[in-house]
Amino acid sequence: MNNEDLDGSDPQVDSSGRVEDSGSRVEPYESLASIYDHVMRHVDYGHWVRYIDNLLRDVCENPRQLIELACGTGNATFALADLAYDIRGYDGCEAMVRIADEKSRGDGRGVAFEVRDLRDLHDVAPAEAVLCLYDSMNYLLEISDIDQALEQIHGVLIQGGTFIFDVCTEQNSLLHFDGVVDVEQGPGFRYTRRSDYHHGDRLQVNDFDIEFDDGRRHQETHVQHIYPIDVLRERIDASPLRLQSAFDGFSRRPGSERSDRVHFVLQRND
Ligand SMILES: C[S@@+](CC[C@H](N)C(=O)[O-])C[C@H]1O[C@@H](n2cnc3c(N)ncnc32)[C@H](O)[C@@H]1O
Image (tube, rainbow, N blue to C red; front, side):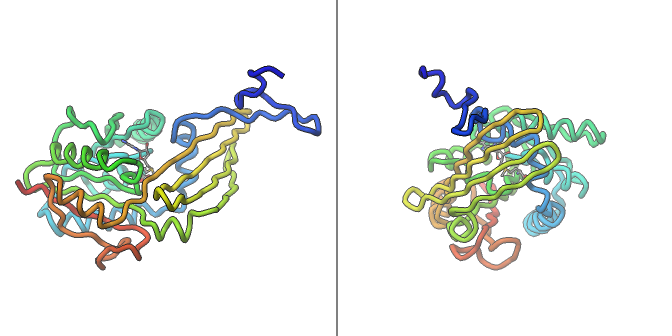
C-alpha cells in the first residue's frame, strides 16, 4: 500500500472485499446546497418571516427595502418577497446562491442573489433593513468576525435602519445537538449527520456525509461558535449599532441562556 492508497478520496476495499468509496471532503454547503431544501423541509419559513415582519414593523413605519445576508437557498428571501418586500439575497457560498438563483429564475420572481461574505459588504447598496437568519451568525467563529460583520452591516443600513439576526444558544446544542446521529434519505440521496457540542471551546460541530445515487459521495464539516448571549450584547455595545431588544425564540419574551434561539433587533441611530 502506498500513500495514495491511504488518501480518503480513493476507493478502499474492506475486509469482506467490498469496494468502498469514502468520498471527498468539500467546503460547508458546497454539496449540501443541492439537498438543503429537503433537509430543511420541516422549517416553517412562512411563520418565521411573519415574526420578522412584525419585529420590523415595531421599529420602522413602513419598511420596504431589505437585504438578507447568509440567505442560503433563498427560502426566507422568497417568503419575504411574497410579503411585498423589495429584497436582495446574499450568501457566502456560491453553491447556495446558485440554487437560490435557479429558483428565482424558475418561477420568474426576479429576486436577485449574489455571493457576498457578510464580513465584506463594501459594494452592497444600502437598505432600510438587513436580516441574517437561522443561526448564520454562529458561523462567524471569532469575536473579530462578529465585530467586522456588525461594522459592515452598519455601513449598508440607512440612518434609522434595522438589523435583525438570530443565534442558537448553548442550551440548544446541549439539548438537541450533542452526540446525535441522524440518518436520512431523500430523492436521489441519503445522508448521515453527526452533531457534537464541544463545551470547552463552545463549538457546535456537524459532520455531514452525503451519498448521491449517481455514486458521488461528499463530506462536509460545519463549525458554529455558540456565543454566550452576554458576549453578543458586549459586541453590539462596542459596535456602531444600538440594541433595541433580544427575544426568546419567536416570542416577545426576553431572550436568555434558557432560550434555544435568540432574535436580536438592532438599529442604526448615529
Ligand atoms: C443554516 S444556513 C441558513 C441559510 C438561510 N438563512 C436559511 O434560513 O435557510 C447558514 C448559511 O450561512 C452562510 N454563511 C456562513 N458563513 C457565512 C459568511 N461568512 N458570509 C456569508 N454567508 C455565510 C452559509 O453559506 C449558509 O447558507
